[in-house]
Image (cartoon, rainbow, N blue to C red; front, top):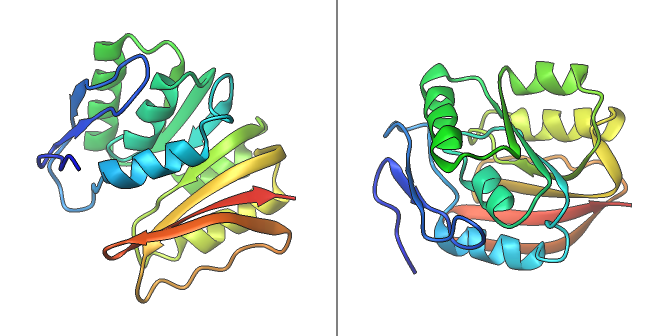
Length: 187
């Protein structure tokens, strides 16, 4: 397993395989580890090509860049931290990633105003923030999920209460260290 250096991440597969990207080395930015991303994208391998993806708490961009590299038609990244957003913008330019769109916005506000439907949604908000449950609820009652959408959630293994909407089926679930990650389908 490859371990990312602080402030650096590696794209695992696809068009930009093995490309290394930089992001601010700040405590709140914790890219999904290589091993977890590899498992997640193995789960999603048939779903990503040609898909519309939403990386709601983009941070380092690890999930969004990986999806774009693996053939997603469009990836929308939402990030409210200006330093992280500047790094995302720089990396989008570095990769000449015309299939990635970045919005500097609050995730909940953006979701409440969004009218696009996404096939895959990545939810990895700051741990213990309560944002995961709130965003799941907004997704369930809003217009952001396509029919049969897949929703990936990542949260701390301890002290992170997560309320999943009725009708979401857990397809896969695993843990790695202090992280729990799951893939849901909206029935």
